[in-house]
Image 1: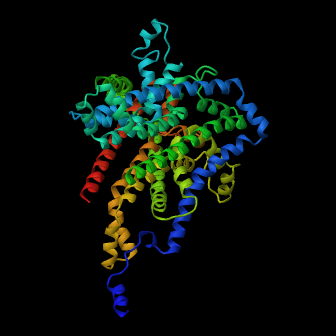
Image 2 (image 1 turned 120 degrees about the vertical axis):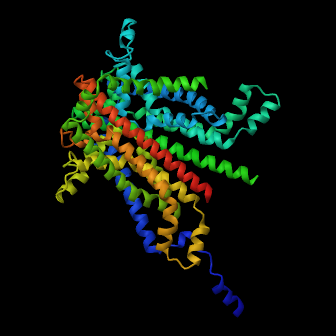
Image 3 (image 1 turned 90 degrees about the horizontal axis):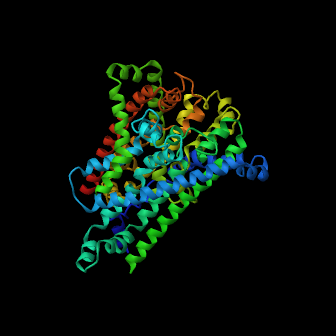
Length: 293
Length: 261
């Protein structure tokens, strides 16, 4: 009895990390963190819906059914799908090249691929005006052939692709690197063709990376404002994306309609965040169940 | 491989070199004049100050949020965790109009703050509020994974050697989180420096007072002053590239430290 009592003193219980701070400190920290997130994120999101529904559900849906809002929604959809497809295709190729092969200048390549994230969206828009605008490098050639890029949907799509360029690659590179090359080499030794290896080995391994990348990329693409604003020309019903349409309505003091349109974008971004977190939990639980087996 | 390089060249390298070449064609004198006129200098200084301030606010609160999310159980934790990502997904124009409505003199928060004599909307403070919003995810998501991977035994060792909680935090936990925290700060700062959508609504956009650098590019473009816009854009691009290299260096440092532990 006395021996075990002594033992407790000689070998103190390991400090449990969760219990390290006093409960008062913990409560204060949790309160600070929750209020910060509530004040800066939850309240603004709630306010979007409150303002959109200010004049009731009838006015809300009437605002959404305006033809200009619908055409803006359509252009945003087309732009988002094109940007996601382009960046997914080339994101896969780029991540494959970077993570499975060693070559000189790899770090430079990675830094260049990150660049669009660091560049101001307005600068991103400007560079495309300088390239494809009337006074731009390719401006004369384009107008000779009757093609329009700037102040037209192609420019909007190009600017959106630029801004979302790194999002898929950044998700895929770490996942592909973690997988290594042994499985692919084994498949090749067993006689699989290059495409078979890609479809049956590489792709399934990076499934979750693709899911995250596509979610991030679409969220950013549908909401891009600065870059698109520079190249769009704000032609209603033709080159207005939904975020630009929100700006126009707001600047015309049609606040309720602006917030109704904004609420659509908010719902889409909430869905993106929620699906990302659900995907994360599923990926985690899939991993633990695999380990248990 | 060739495909990757071709795509990168078409989407990223070609456009950015068009910008640099356009600036080079202006000649040094014209470039300097356009890039350093008083109105432009005022916009740089405003962009810098507000981005630094917002990054610091996020540095403090983002750290607390990451700490609480990793270490303490509390109800609604998953919701808070998910909400942290929202500023990345929410279109900046939506953030801009809703923050303006909330902080305008007639809004919920604006009315209360005005009673205290604080002007937020249409003042530099409003720009900081918008930049804090867009920067929230960066510090939290940089610190969180490192904090999660921190082994308990180092802290236990320090505690069994007689260190108190504050000493452990300052001497054991903080040093290992420092590179990640700095990375988050730098990312939030870089994002704040270039941010446009959420700021233009709340700033009021008065020349010399509340006009940020990206907005000035936009204004010059509307006046067909492509050279003026290009000069400012090159300065912003140079700052962005510098920060990107700095962040990459930090990340290499933190991953090397992680490997050493």
